[in-house]
Length: 286
Image (cartoon, rainbow, N blue to C red):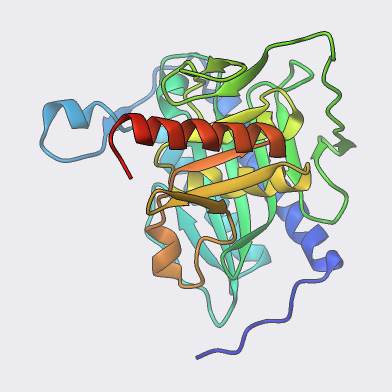
């Protein structure tokens, strides 16, 4: 077994944050360059006709991931890579893995619905330690990159982000897989992009968000952002919600990770967990 690398220094994290920003920017530039053009689109899945319509991939997804991987290899050739569109690339005696989603919200993207993101997360022994998400919109109503990793908290295009909710607003927003929260003090929203909802939680646009079965590339960068902003992160395992710790230490384990997640302020995350427990009881679950 390869000895673990030392815990990354703030200097190394800042360097990886800068590279993550470069990678997310590649995704953003390619997305913007292809808006309005006719894209080649395929659908992943089995032979079931309905399933085939659930998971589209555009020519941009694959091209962007290939570009990101080449750029990343120039900076950190020993690090592992997990991406949505291409095979897992094992690292060379390294505890660092990069989780990449070239376009999260592909269905939105191919339909011209302007909510999508290009997501990059950096993991140290399965723990998100840096991230960068190019988002098609933001708290400033402009596209740009949310990022973190060098010990300076959450930033957007290099500037510190400090959410300041309006105390006059009595009902805030929650990301919900069904598009509306069945209970609780929020108005539910479903954007079609887990990555952008993570960024919106970090930026304070959503108080909380719940994800049913995300993949690691959907949320790795977003979890890093959420933690940098002080948000709480919980995952469900065997019907129990516990604080998220890591995606696991083995590359194969990380690549197969799928767990329900809740991100948000400590109070709102706890309230959402209570609702999930109540729903489980209502459905006869123990």
